Amino acid sequence: MKIGKKYILLFFFLAMQLHGQEKKYAVSDLDNAYLQEMKAENAELSARIKTFPQEIQDINKKVSQAIRENNASKALELAVEMDKKYPKNADIKNFIGKLKTKEAKYDEAVLLFDEALAINPGNKWFYINKATALAENNKIEEALKTIEKLNSAYPNWSIGYNFKASLFRELNQQNEALKAYEQALNAAPPSAQILTNRGDFYLELSREEQAIADYKKALEIQPDYARAKEKLKSIPKTVSDKK
Image (cartoon, rainbow, N blue to C red; front, side, top):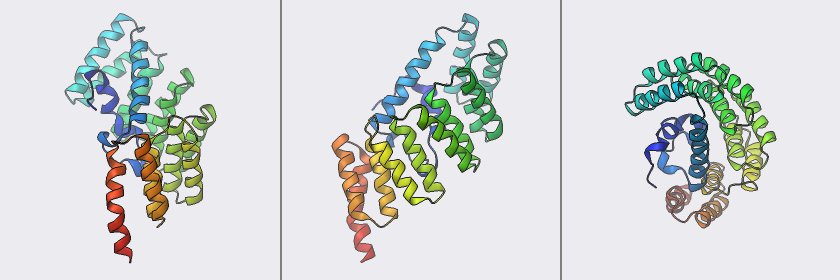
C-alpha cells in the first residue's frame, strides 16, 4: 500500500504508537485495519488543523516541512511556538508530546499528553501515545492503567485491547494477555495483525496448533498479510526443531 504525503506526520511517529512485542515490526507489517484507523485519525486531524487561526496554520506548514527534512529539533521549536500562541489546543500538545517521546524525555511527554487529554478526553490516540511514553520509560503498570481507561471509554475498539495484551506480555501475565487478545478479537475493527500477534504469543507458549489457527484466520481477514504468511511457513521448521 502506497503512503501518500498527507500521511507523513502520522507515519513519522508510528514507532511511538507501537510498543513492546510490536516495536520490532515495520510500517509494512501493519495490517489494513491499523492503517485505516490511523488514516481516519489523520484525516480528522487535518480537518481540525483547518480550523486553526491562519497564523498557526502557517507555522504548522513549517513544522511539516521540518519533518519532511528529518529535522526534529526544528519541528519541536516551531511546535512550542504554536503552543505559546495557541495554548488551549490538544493536538499541538499531543504533537509536542510525541516529539518529547522521540527524544526519550518521557516524563515531559506524559505531562503533555495529560494536558491534551484534559482538553480533549475523547481522542483515542492520546491515550495510546501516553501509554507508549510510560511503557518506554518502563512504567508498564502505569501504562496499563492508561490503557484500561481507554478500554473503558472505547469498549469496542480492538486496537486498545491489543495494546493491553502487549502490556500484559511485558508483565509476563500470560493468562491476562490471552484474555486481552480475546477482547480484542471480539471488538472492531477485525484485524489480521492482532490475530498474528496472538499467534506469535501462542508460539512462545509452545501451542503451535493454536498459533497456526490464528495465522490462518488472519489470512481469511486479509489474504495478503505478509507477517501471517511468513509465520505459517516457519511453523513446520519450528515444530521439527523441537522434535
